[in-house]
Length: 129
Image (cartoon, rainbow, N blue to C red; front, side):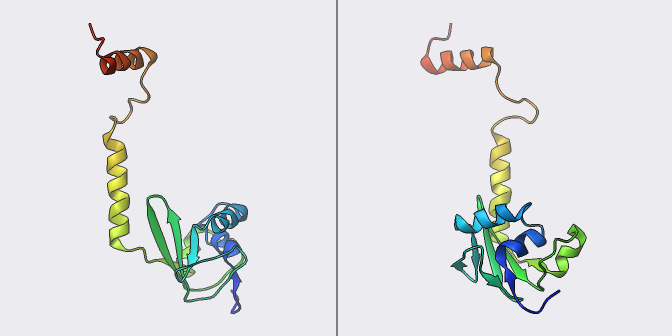
């Protein structure tokens, strides 16, 4: 643990929000990561108390930095460094998105077969006999 700040890409990797540091840096570059509501580069220094917003479709997750570390840690240790403070309406939106995606096709059916697809195309064209 260090009292000075650490790069945002390194911190996101250390607390296991991204699998690799390069993925964290890429997310910063694409504007998916912001600190205290400001979009940041991967070299931005982060300090304890900062709020990190990460856009993960379809919601924005918010984390509060409790402590700083630049060394990757086990998953059990991350609650001492970050706290998930995502708003309930964002979490509800995530649940609705999960329900919507599962409602389209019964679980386990998979993709339509070639015969199913041909039948669907005939139905849509009105050539069903």
